[in-house]
Image (cartoon, rainbow, N blue to C red; front, top):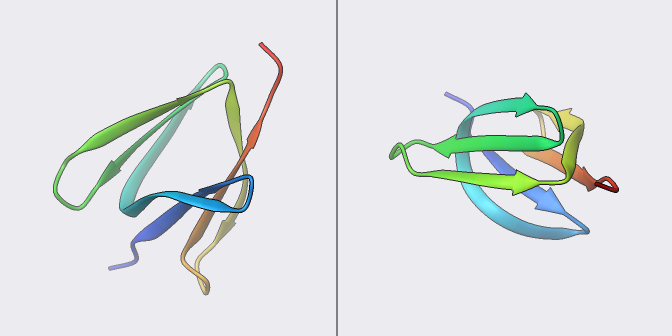
Length: 61
């Protein structure tokens, strides 16, 4: 299984992500333990399976 690290502004903010969903400007992620986190005013700009990176970029509200 492939778990991703969530990166925003070059900083890893959440690890072991196996689920990601966007609704408007909100990205919701969940890790392998089922713990979730919301990133408001963000969008997914890159998914890199080889580097296990899920890169977010902030957007203006």
